[in-house]
Image (tube, rainbow, N blue to C red; front, side, top):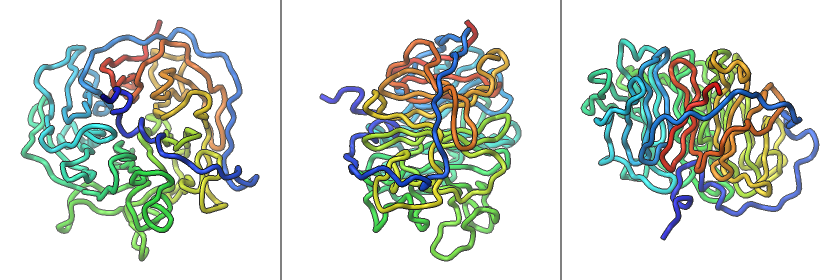
Length: 396
């Protein structure tokens, strides 16, 4: 029988494929460096239990919403916590449409910026056809979605059941950003150079679309996307060279982008790009795993990670988090919290373009099977365990 750790989602099994043993990249081949200088950990923080769920993989809420948070369960259910109480009736139940198990399932949820008036939200899931679906729904009431409102935005062919990405976010610009994995297998093996470096593929990317239907199309490609209307390139691509960006986030105050990209068999990484930059950034996979040269290189001009951790130190599958903006946690303000599925330890670091400082354990209890972090409409940060519990970072 498989252990629970063997039936994890997109962020957790990505380490199983074997990697190459190539020499490190030449100096200067990457544009970012990593610094993990020790610093005093913030004090006065604890994990406050919130509720338990069935294989939870994410938590989020509409902007400004202080009463409700929404929890995504991998088998295909979204549940509502209203005023601290979990409602018995699901917000949305699409289990009949979802393939769940391993790294597949209902993986992501995001709310439109005008959700308060439009009721529009988006989900990302692995369908019964083994493809990755991005679907728009509308709510029926504040506590219930309308299942009949489903409108498919994207359906992506995915050659293998692992490395599915799954994270969705709506940016300040109102565009829908979609994180996709590289299609699975070791060394991004599909195609002549894999999918991550293939600008004709949607896989191994951060995509950016306008989710509004227009001209008979289910979505449109923004004209300011870096590869808009370029022959042989998918205009939906914003950034590329990713392996499995399982959990990534925008800083709610600055708009900075931080990506936890799951490594292969040696290195986990955190990527960072400040707000205001244009797209088209190449984060380097499959040429690089972290700062380690992996295949087909050297490839100059890629942007390296700001944080790396090695499997030899107990890391196996990075779980990207959030820059904390909770006014009740002033000691964490502006600091990035993240973790790892195997270690269960929550880390904290100060990020900047080109590096990070103060990367160390936060000093709270470990969270077994740390599948995700989440942020509610007021900026409070949550920690999610695939084993069931959900916690909130709270003042001690």
